[in-house]
Image (cartoon, rainbow, N blue to C red):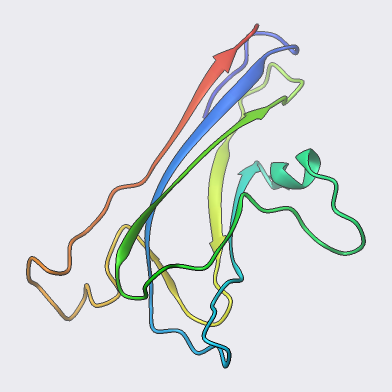
Length: 131
């Protein structure tokens, strides 16, 4: 949460997302339609920042994980203009195409308690700039 001091304030949103893709079931093996988005309240702010013709939606990333069952770290930065002095709540949402995306943990975490299945950490940091 962050409360801008002026309606002209910009919010720098910085995201470090650590995630693991479970075994995928895409017939083409690409698994390239996993999406990462940032929301302010219930609004997908990426949709407000991109020009998206037709019924397409915006996304911070359409990520095809390089390898399933391995933790990967994704980094994003964007500038938001909430045009408000009310408290703003930001959240990150991930959507998997045909598998499960595990955030901050390995896909085998519940059943495998060894050093080869580490846990991760994700952060979302907001900073007011240009009040």
